[in-house]
Image (cartoon, rainbow, N blue to C red):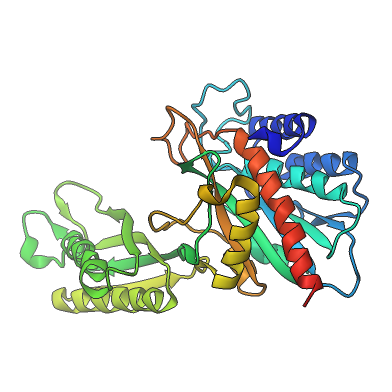
Length: 390
């Protein structure tokens, strides 16, 4: 697939991808990453480059001043994971790894930037956003607060996906990613000696009932046509084997792809926790922390993205999501303010199909870099022409 870009540019993308992979940086600490991005852009002839939100980078290509700009976005941060890929360019930063492909996203967008910098004339200005802190769900908000959406007409982004073969571009109308809310339940009962259970209000029993009851929200209260998740990830209670615990703490995640389902899940968790507390005489406090909203492609923007994808890999290689994706993505904050679309780049590697994103053995097919760069290049042209003509 590297015939989509010239061999020299493809090699440059591979080189910077491997450099970033070897030197990953956590959310909010992407200092070296930002410097590498800026140097690549300068070498490609960019003069309008700025640092935004401390470790973010924004670059501009000029176009007609009366036309809104097309924005292309990549994320740049890594994860707190010990790498086990045995790659020649494995992380040298102990406990930090590009286990989600953000090194690839950055390389793709840099490749697209170089391609677009060589266009003799653009129908609309193009802005390149290299966003930090996506994994914390905070980077997009920080970038927006510093004005990266000023004069924005459309915005496009994407994510490498090992579920699909290289050469496939996944474009879907409607939900692409889920919301990412979290909840904490504090249970205050009455501790007692393990030999005198009648003197207690057992927080472990209360918490266990709550864990089981929460599973019925999705299975019995949500229409199966609307994917959603309520998962308990942490249950802390007790200090000794012969002491009945008087306190417990549960933590979990809530995922939904539709706003009304998201609201129902919040309400149901509160209702069930309160009822179980009353049933057993325990005091229960429930807190829900909002995370990123769902990523939702409008039909119009998805269709425009399909056109760009078909020009890149052929119509036969443009497919919709096969199954609901319940992962989160702070690209949703951009789409709340600007029309756009978010797609997925097939990048499956033979023998590594079982290693998902956020795995210590995650890797992707680097041929996808050429596809991503070409897709972003074509989307800037297509979207620019549409903005210019409206």
